Length: 370
Ligand SMILES: Cc1ncc(COP(=O)(O)O)c(C=O)c1O
Image: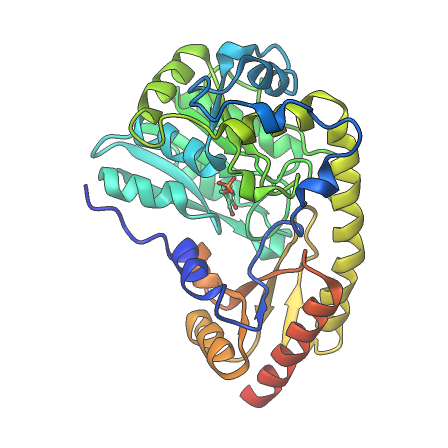
């Protein structure tokens, strides 16, 4: 199986540790363990045997995840190494050569890449800037067909940070039902909403919905590599079996910490901490964009620590971000990595001073492009 390069992840892997200012993140600055654990910390952590544990995730963790999804039980949950593994095992096990998959653009291009490797036919539908990044429903209705095996959406979306309106969520579920297709909803940014109103899940809209989630974005704990897949129990059993080929099991320490976070009311505390950081920080790119509105523009994100910035200069986004890295040691992600040129994704979840310094250099670079 020849799998295409995952351009976004490779771009970050290659360059993020080589620059002065890495503004490529999409979440919030990460928790430390002592920032997370306090007097109530799980006391058994230091004496926990470093064994494989339950390869599909411990029962307490699967129960805690299931409680976030109405009518779900532990049978509906597979714990994975990050939501990336959840997306991978779900897609890999369910697409064959010639199958059709309808895929949202711009997007995190992981499922797109796995679909290419499987030899599937990928039919895009677009979020439109003129619709404030809502989907073009006419285009979507045109591309769905009885041959469609999967519709894949990311909600809230990466890279725009915008959530699909509720009536559109229902319409997408209706279209999936009409074609008897799987509806894959990557909801890893759920809980990272800046206004504190959690985006309603696709879960429960239709029997063939499969949801991806995890602790990387809304929770600020990407280093735990803790994600999950929620779906019908037979789908989850197959995905568990597929994951025997990827990583076998989830890290036992991550499993225990995640159980602690999701079980004990810590979720609200974590979300509040992250929301406060993101709301405070978002003022920085908004002012930065406003101060040079002849060059850049922005639809403010609703969730996550990322802003999808449109720029005016007539330069390809990969070229622009490569020059910015080489000439000013600042890293931002080219729109090309999400399937849309003339944009870049700016991560604003880091320390404020760091973000401002990176943006100052970016402004100097942009001014020089004129
Ligand atoms: C939409 C989306 N899904 C999945 C992932 C993978 O994240 P992780 O494996 O850290 O949960 C990302 C990472 O950026 C993402 O943006």
